[in-house]
Length: 353
Length: 179
Image (cartoon, chains in turn red, orange):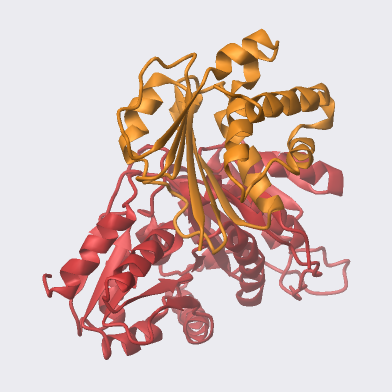
């Protein structure tokens, strides 16, 4: 078995990206994700890759756009306010149907906010952020190991569907260290016949562009893109179930919050409360089916979030509001204790919604 | 199932995060599940610093410690802030050369170690943290002192090789400290 090493979540993302064949990183520093850039700055020059600290977030996302158009595996990373700046580029990349990996190690907002962990960019990640009808695949790691494995998976999904994958992490998982192992595996290589690699006068030139002035053409592009999205919704949802077999209450939480919720679920089980956890690993596509099925079995859902309640809307949609959904939340960089989640579970058990 | 939740707190510059790293790596060496979570806010830039280390024989849930089994307090504000959060039956390690306060709880075990004083006398002024860690290892069979050198080798970069011996010296001073 591969050696267990200790690594920060941010470093795990960077190392995994390199192992996935990413040789181009463009970024701009911001707490709490700067270790990604630092790791890339150290490693990329040694392996013939490019690390470039751009003059701004806007520049860095457009460098990603350009490098991806040339068919390269490329990434950028930032934290909440920086992602807002990248939103224009994200929309252009979506409108051009090319792959990219974008990491958001979230901090409290809105505005410049704070630097402590948060999950309040859920809407921005899953519902848009940039303008126009588009989606990003959104992966939510809950451990340092997943920071790595979902980064590798994220590059593959981005290439497979020719679109952006966002890793939606938070300051805690970015900063913490845990044991991690890397398996030796060659990165998967995807054909990119659309890439701007030079025609050598042997083929028609490729165009990467998001401008369609004729509305019927633009409409057609949008419909085609949403057929692809429907395919992803059907095939790519990922989640983890914990103690759900006989659960009467279902906690829904992702990322760092799911780990706090797990402690609370284990405590509640000791007190004889039948409670389980569903942890969405993909936030888009949202694991709708497993939640819809749970809605027929449990009597209530609790959405645990580091926000004023964003994922709770998707939980209500997925469960078609068949059962009450309550919110257990902290915001602004504060984190609930397992006891706070436990008392939300106890309330739900008593039927207090 | 055994889980040890260690909260280390003090000033920035006292090696709070480093001692946490040492304990996390020691746990890794003992094939335990571990997590290490630093405070990364503005406090890192000169104010208070703290570090959460969890060592367990089962997977670690939340990496955030709210009720530590072990508190290492390297300054007065840290002791005052966290003394009541330690679980009954837990341990508190106090750098008694920096903290005059006595713990007024009888349900925890308290170790008063004048670590900063000892470190100064021994010419290793910056390693008070490792003196306390050395004493902690002696009290924790799941970690033990064996293998400490392997961890120090891992953590001290080759460029600062001289620090390896000094860290080992600090750990031994802590191990052998008797009140």
